[in-house]
Length: 382
Image (tube, rainbow, N blue to C red; front, side, top):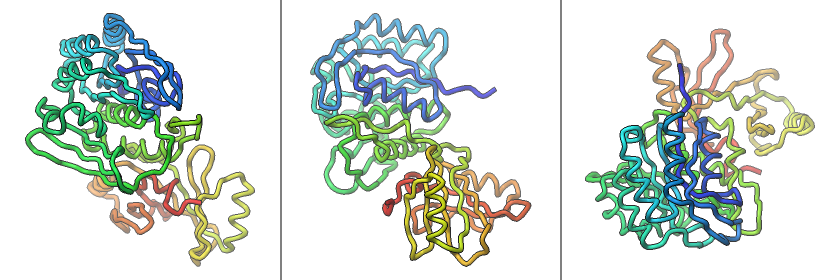
């Protein structure tokens, strides 16, 4: 029978709900995993900064780990804020024991909060080396990577390294995956999202990667999906607080981040653009694309699904159903090998979607596609 991916998160608590354990739980839950926790520190913090940190004793951290590992079991581990050098050493030793030795470890070496508050002293940073030797992948931001001694120093521990570009300069954010002895094996470029509501990006990314690994995804696709999840969470940020506000992980749903298909978009033909737009607004849908010159409008429902109308000369009453997959090409290849005939194999379209097209046995048009953030947040979104 299918099992739920079990992710153990070893990190600190954020009373403001933006980062730490709270962001981790939201990410794993929204991506379909089961989040378990071993809390290393309690913080008093909000969007303006960290007012106080209370470290949890190392033996209590270990008891939390033992409690869930001995009953529920663990597929992957994500480590964020570790609390102290003593806890870092104790956790590294605990993760080497047989019951957890096979669990992939995603290590996000949290040292400085988005607000600038320091969350790890020199002794704790030094103790990170044992965790790097145990990790499958480390996900430091640029200042954290510098504090660890740079790229070569991290790779020398034998783990993969995701070099994140969020703290860099320029309009494009570049993330690079490096492997020991191989150098760069993958990179992702995306436009920078201009927002101050980015509290918890690193926590969310690392936990999303850990969830993907727990679900059986290889590292590179797990990172790609995690990046999409983070970007959608940034775009969905609710705008809370007076400083670096929390992201909107809770709004990332029906976005086709999974391998299996998501039924999340339908396009209906129309013969009068203005009349159809007014009708669907009256239905309570939110218009997010308005392109009267192309006869095209898109609307978003409260659950994140979308509906479009298109005046394209076709008879009114026609409809195209869209099924989205986070692994479109592999899905289409799987179907083609089993005799499904396609009118169009996957190709990149100018509106940012990758699409394959076919018809069902009754002649209804279907589009299998992958859009990421471009379904709900195209550059031309209203």
